[in-house]
Length: 215
Length: 215
DNA sequence: CTATACATGGAACAGATAATTCCGTTCTAG
DNA sequence: CTAGAACGGAATTATCTGTTCCATGTATAG
Image 1 (cartoon, rainbow over the protein chains, first blue to last red):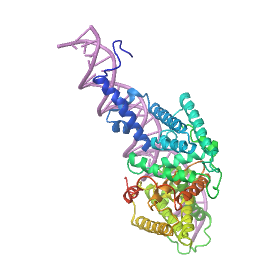
Image 2 (cartoon, each protein chain N blue to C red):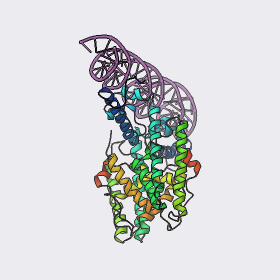
Image 3 (cartoon, rainbow over the protein chains, first blue to last red):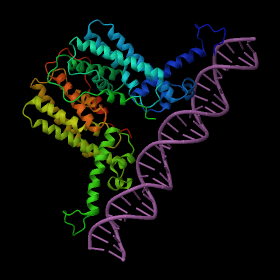
Image 4 (cartoon, chains in turn orange, cyan, yellow, blue):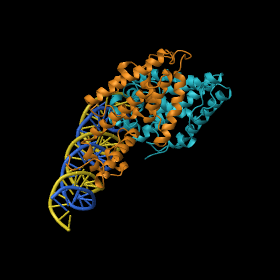
């Protein structure tokens, strides 16, 4: 697995190509599966401009590739949360967090793929952390009086789902439009709000239900 | 097709059952295809509690059933628009229209199914009418100063798509949640708005692109 | 230069999935 | 009692898709 004399710098010729393919494949998988969570694996290979073998050399199955995407998506989500928490103003931090989640489209990489693979320990832990950070960000902003009081943290799941559903044109265009509607949504979340919102918000159980594996 | 002595009242026995099945099948199709636009036709039969024959006796193909659903969806949309226009206050009428579109989930019956069947003349005409009424409702409210000026009518397509994407639990629960987020969205659409919205809104071409048949 | 191990492309395989057809059965009307 | 409408659901056929397999090409060690 590690040929003795190999120092890790040159990465010349074939090996460089292989490293490049690592990127190409992941990027293609992101694009394909965010556009269509049920896409065939051949579509990923085609989009990456490689053969199917190149995929199976790296991931032993479709499930494993999906798990990788989901894990990366959770990391992006967590990164967005940290970015938000790094901002002192509670509202600004909260808004920054939402922007990150939306531009990375972490929803499409996580929930939208959930149910199509067996979750791992690692994934579970990441999701717990993601959850805790979300609550921190939300509570900090709401307790500062910035978020209207009749919104709860679980409303965010529905918000992400809505924004992620916007699919017009290519990825870049979709990202721009999502930011447009995020700006609208942020307006509506701001305290103090107007008339009370109807109906109970999503329950914790309803949120979690969407993660269960339907093998 | 019309047996001479048959007056149209009794509808007894087998014939009554058949009329009932008409309803059962349409209702099942609505439920199944709004939940999953790519669902197999067998799922509809199962949900309706009938055999596959009962379906094919009424619709010569899956496409024809989908066309029927789409047409009905457009009629519901048009009805909602008329309901809105019947209200004198421009904003209240606009809000009522949106509520209709959301509770009937016409988006799931129309756009979400579009692209899976060849459109007919009839469908085309209905969609033109739907479009005109939408513009009327929107312009009336915006010219009255009730809708913030940096929103355009084509933003509504994105709004409908977002609200329709909310799928938690069963149909009824989803409908309630959609109304919750519609209330938020209405808040954000209200004039005068706060900071300007980023990015250009959807273009007419982007909207129409979503209707094209991908046979 | 040449042998070897690594990567790769893509055809072949096997198992699902799903639209549609077909046939035997049931029930109603007359 | 009989003809035929309405039906249930198995059989058929076509397609799709995850995975395996093997021939080919390439870079590096010696």
